[in-house]
Image (cartoon, rainbow, N blue to C red):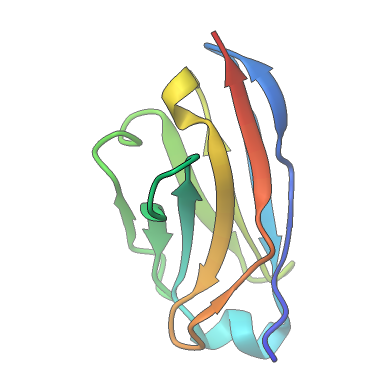
Length: 113
């Protein structure tokens, strides 16, 4: 069982910032591309941002220019820095390890307008 631990969600006003973190075991982190997904109420889970083992990033159109995904091999952590948040960014954010096909427990992000 892959164990991904997320943190950093919360309530923020529109225009504000939040940083989400996901920590995995060293072996999992070393061999997995990592991603963040978002699931709004009544919606399907959708990709927000992804980063390969080598550091190549990919973003949903809605996240480009506002969100930054990064990974820190010393801490086995992938971080999603979210700036200029909008109400439509509200949802549960999940960390995902692509090769292991494993999800974190999710962390709630609520953006008030």
